[in-house]
Image (cartoon, rainbow, N blue to C red):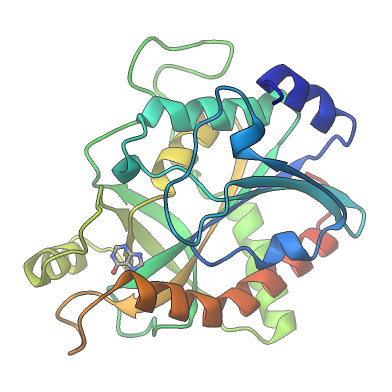
Length: 269
Ligand code: HPA
């Protein structure tokens, strides 16, 4: 067992500036890390544990080209019963160890006929529809302001660079709006209709708490969705977690390539 301070010391030696949070079935980026150092969440005293199939619960530090990178394989969902503040604590710990750039990934359902299952979406903005917020409670002014500005939450410069990387790699990538629900049930057909009217392109059960906490902490954020299915009522077949995992695997290869190329071509956090 190690504690959070040991973890900080361990990772501080490598000085990663970029962290990548890997969603359901999207762990491939971590496999590309050179000289990997693996720490199981279960071995970190006081660290929250993941309970979802497809989420390993490991932190993996390693090199990608000229960059030291920290991958979080397995994230904390509010539907698992985690407090939203726990997610902010994890993100703040990343900032503490020197992370300046956070890449968040997720598996998501499509609300837009142009985003087919197996494709990727670059998140340009989000709608927080989960009814919770990681910043509720006393504000720590050392981390960030009480009322953080969200106008550039998904950093426009990083997005422009990611679109260029995708173009060069020949991987289709379009920007869209991500809407977060609390889950764990998939949406009703009526909800999907409503979310489309609200202007969302994809729906999922994660990412927004991390991004809010990261923006509060002053990190530069890039978000990518692997589209695993159409929203309820947009196609005939019912949704299952297995379907989500299988389609995520298809998109996972492209997602990993994009992130690896992006970090190699943009090494400074
Ligand atoms: N809805 C919510 N979350 C999801 C979906 C979905 O259709 N697919 C993958 N994650």
